[in-house]
Length: 186
Figure 1 (cartoon, one colour):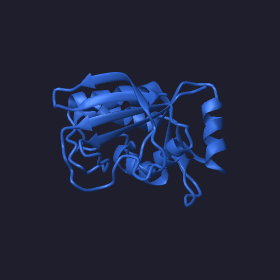
Figure 2: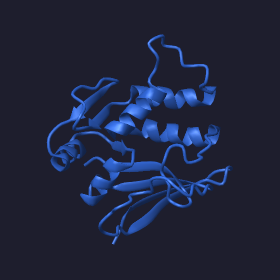
Figure 3: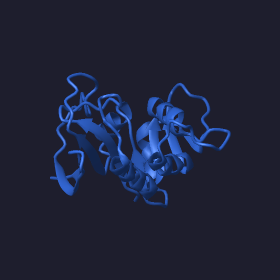
Figure 4: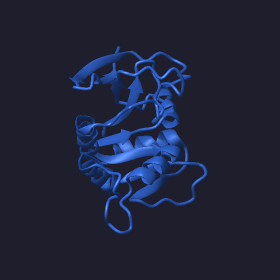
């Protein structure tokens, strides 16, 4: 069975909004690039899919935009090439190497996990909450930044039942951020 890993940036006070004050640097982007390369599929909801596509899809010209630092290009290339599965009740079609997840979410994700392959990376805010409620997330990877946002959406807000986690990996960054990876435990 494939592993479903939820990965997200989070502030010390739990904010997961992409504008919460996460300042990307080369070390930070290398971490996300490695994670993207480990995944052989991405699972996104509509909002995250569209946000990532707007930021990271290779332009029709084939030339990455001037605003992109050279150390961001490997991440852009990795996400651009990755197969994507998009959960949406409003989109009728997707492209960017993507397919829509059709039907009831739980059996559809279980089918994805049962397919041959390795890691499925999931991102976003609302979809991971539903997946956590269904017990479908195998690993939680949090890149905790030394920022207090004071407002914004928070990590798995509204989760009905507590999920006990076991730490399986930790990495500290020069910026003061820490990557923590957990799996559900007893």
